[in-house]
Image (cartoon, rainbow, N blue to C red; front, side, top):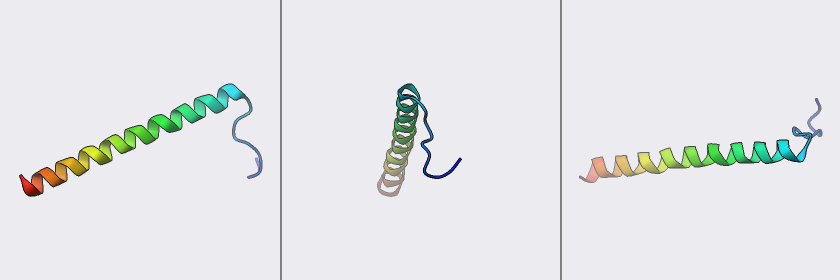
Amino acid sequence: MSASQSAVRSRAEAVSASRTLDYMILFTLFFIILGGYHIHFMLTG
């Protein structure tokens, strides 16, 4: 597969890939915010 080809072949695959990426971003942001809160609370509490 060349770099110029699309990774998805249909609209349904594109929607699924986009939703998966959104969930991965939300999961990561949740733990970054939770970790940031934890660190600041432990340093100041």
